[in-house]
Amino acid sequence: MATRRSLLLTLAASAAALTACTRTSIWEARYEPSAPGADLRPIEQVKNAPRPAIRRVPWERLDATMTEFERELAASDTPREEWSPEQRTSVDAKLLRGLQVTQDPSAVTILGVTQFRTTDFDRPSDADLATLAARAGGDTVVWSSRYLGQAERVVQEPVTTYSTWTAWYGRKGRMRTGTDTTTTWVPVRVQADLHEFVAFVLRVAP
Image (cartoon, rainbow, N blue to C red; front, side, top):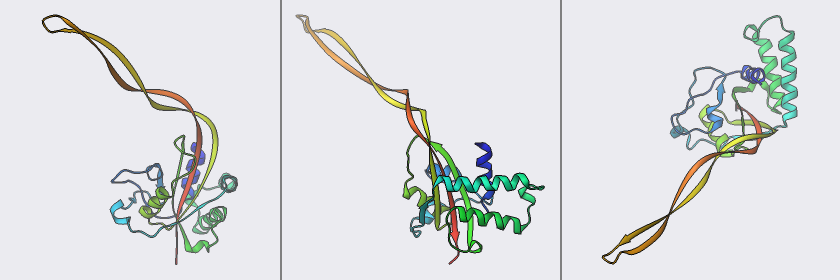
């Protein structure tokens, strides 16, 4: 999967973001901009940003696009870093078509991509995707996901223990008993659904 991830990152064709100064979602934490070193904008600066367009495309469509790109990369006598601007533009246009972007490819900037696997959820939060887009300077997010089956997940479960005590008090030696409870949290391995997510952040010229 590392190869596929590197290919996804290679397709991202322009500027944007990384590094958050506040709590970040996994979408922000795994985000890779097209221009390395470009920081995500502070969350305080994007609180009133316009809501981006958020769309989902079928995984099969995205996967077919990536398979086509792999074939082109394998057939090329030069690495993508040495491709001509025309070659890069052609590949970016194919990616945008795979993402079902209908605007003229010359008017669309691919800012970056985020990819990860998780058992925490089976669908992204629109709020998380909107924050990612705003901090990256984008106005569109196109995402996809697939189910990978069951995987182990570590969760914290409460375990309560009880202890009984006896005490004597008073001159006549009266007996008193009581029970104390203690709750601790311990890690437990459970089975959970595993999903893989990919999201591209775009900026469309007006």
